[in-house]
Length: 273
Image (cartoon, rainbow, N blue to C red; front, side, top):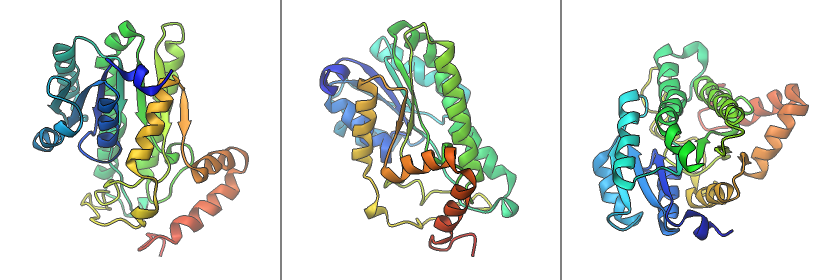
C-alpha cells in the first residue's frame, strides 16, 4: 500500500504543528489526501500556514496548549465536530532544555513533563475512544534521548523515556483492539526546538549549539513518519547514529555513557566546560 492510498480521506491530528517536524508532517499528510487538524499555541501562525497544508474544508486550526487537559479535550472535540472521526493522532508538541541538573530550577523539569509527557497523555486520553472506533493509530514523537540519556537534558530525556513507557504500555493494553501505537524516535533533526530550549532558569537559550544545516530535514523526517504509519509499525528509529546509540546503550551501557559525555562536551558552549 502506498502512502497516498493509505492517507487519502483519513483524519489526522498533529500537535506542535506550527513549525519543524509537526508542520512538515501536516503538510505531507495534507498532500497525501488526509484531512488535517493542526494544533499549536499560536493560532494566528497556524491560520497563516494552513493554506500550505490542505485546501479549505480539509484543514482545521485549533489553538491548543497540550499541557492543559481542557485544551486537549477541546482539540479532539473540534476535530470530531469538523471531520466526524479521528484516524491518527500525532503527539509531536514538545520543548527541550539545556542545563546541568545541579544548576537547574525545578520549574524547568515541570515544564518539560507538562508539555512532553502530560501533553501526550492528555491528547491520547480524549482521542482514544475515536481511535479505537476507527482502529486508528496514536504516535508519540520521542527522541533517541528517550532510549539513551542525554546529559544536560535531564527533563527532556526523562519526559521522552516516560512517553515511551506510556505508549508501550498502551500498545499492550489494546493488543486485541486493532489500535496502532507508534513510538517514533528521530535523531537530530533541523528545527527550532534547540533555539527555544530552556536554560537553567527557564529562559530560552535563543541559539542552537549544532549546525542545523547538517541535520536531517524536517521534511525527510516527516516522510519516515508517514511510511511508518502506512506500514503500521510499532517503532521507528531514525539515523545511523541514532540506531547505533540505541543498540550500544542496550549492549554496552557504561561505554555509551562515556561516548555520550564526550560527544556533548564538544558542543558549542557545552555545560560541561
